[in-house]
Length: 194
Image (cartoon, rainbow, N blue to C red):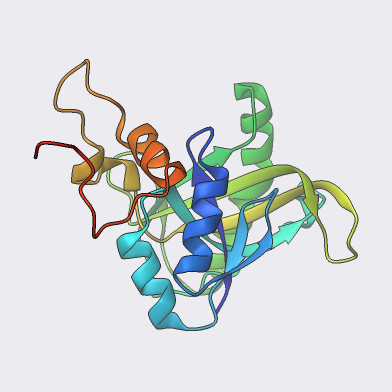
């Protein structure tokens, strides 16, 4: 099984990594939120049950240099995609990265004789470039690492339990973290009187 990067709301890093371990995964790098699952069944259970991450990005390649970032898409042919960034600030920086990455994506599909287009509305795949400052590389040193990946779950923040019922509602991810930090036991009552 390949590695994946978790994208989480601020403050949920430790809870997200705890969920990975609870579902049979292994934390590879806690700073980068990089993890892996040996068993596909554990990974499936994780992506259907995890509440902490907003996105799970399957890592296609990684490098300390954006120019050396490879691209190898493991799934069937697609006709449209979107490219998003995580950890990269500034529109000019993103535009510069896109000028480097997009030719790699287009040439990959061109070699496979697949006509592909970039779209923001309802893409068949969403590719991510994730920059993690202070991540641990293969030699064990810490530095900035770029990860190229594909979103395998869609926007998990749009799951029903994360939708706000009212403007004054407690955010679902904040409520989840509070419950986890308090050591909630599902066999006991959470609210007294209910």
